[in-house]
Length: 189
Image (cartoon, rainbow, N blue to C red; front, side, top):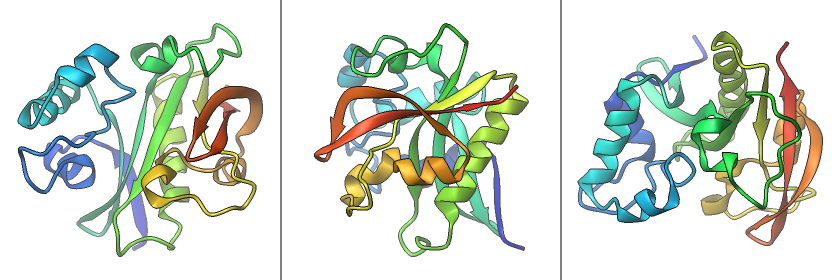
């Protein structure tokens, strides 16, 4: 059957991918770029999951990858205007188009090395296109083939984005895990 990627509409599946094992833990829930910094810092424990549930009520906050009935991957993708990338001083705007951003790609342990990241990025592109986005951007590290720590690999690599037909659109002043981040973009028109 293969990996299927579809819009993230099931809260429990989102929780499986980005939520904590212990409900009171303060994990990202993929909110750090999705909500303003002050709000992100103020949310603790179960309030983080409730914020995701609230965002989900307004539409899918990303896409999920499934292997049969098992959720195995997540990619956060949404209009840039609704993210902190809209005002981020380290990541430039190429133009004034209402582009979408993809900023987090996660694959569950035990499922890595099977091309799921590629499927997630392709699914994010398809979701943005179906939602009317004129273009989609990502902000991966330019690691030039060097190993990226798994906890910091969520932004993807330049090579991953290049394989998905994104092109280098701009350099940034953002650095993650010692690697510069670049702005990669794919036109969807």
